[in-house]
Image (cartoon, rainbow, N blue to C red):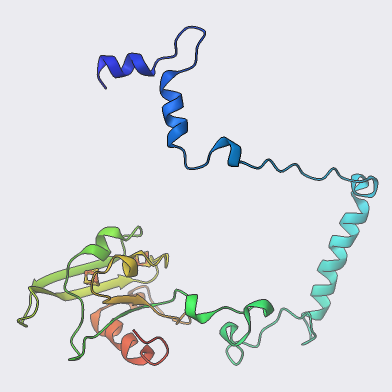
Length: 207
Ligand code: SF4
Ligand code: SF4
């Protein structure tokens, strides 16, 4: 920082810091748009705490007993016969269309891997779990292709940034979540496995 900028940033004696107004103007939310929310004062019964503790304990016991059966309030799900995506969102299910599960590598119309090894996805990945080895493409319509493409599904945080970054829609997160592996190595999905995920999920989540 130059001497001039440093002096401008310093507070004047008895005055406001000049740089601050500039900072405030740059803020996304204006002061007049901020709504102060004051919590409701607790009433007499709440101030004793005991009735609220009993009420909370009652809810715990209700769920404890109903979980043994299949009553209306039961939280038990008979997985894998019952699955979250079969339930509505209001019933505690999940909307499969929004779910970010295991990755797939998409194929093009000719069945080749769509990826052009641009390295955008490993660059943006916050978990550093995508590893690609690029090679000269054997096809005329692109310069490179991924000779090796691996995703460590155990390190992945399923943020979806790789999907967002891909310029050719080659990598996608599917709705599949029940993946298992006996070793860490099994959970490192290589190119063939990622292409296989595409083959088995294309009907569920078309491109
Ligand atoms: S979903 Fe996020 S963490 Fe997982 S591979 Fe993609 S960018 Fe990385
Ligand atoms: S961003 Fe897409 S094209 Fe680029 S390396 Fe990743 S999957 Fe391949």
